[in-house]
Image (tube, rainbow, N blue to C red):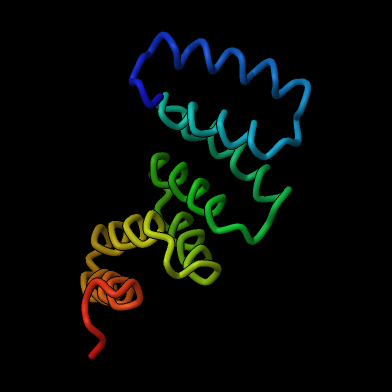
Length: 131
């Protein structure tokens, strides 16, 4: 995926499918497969893998973001919102979650929430001075 080679992504997807059969409960395999599926415009299948990973390792912020990303791609932003808010409870400085949640807030015309979220993140990261 990093090289943006469709041929390599397809080859990787096939390999991951085989590995998933041997290691159906491996979070790394499921996460990689979910990422390829999400990139391939298969958010429902990606979500299935990401939800399984969350069941295997609950309360892990990056896995919550993965599930939220698949939900957003599937047009299920209200459900994604819950995952993203949980992510920030677990790790308030996870940039990907801040960006996604801010975007969801903006899409829901909750600009004040989006601005507050980004401002809080920037202060915590030392990007802008604390007031």
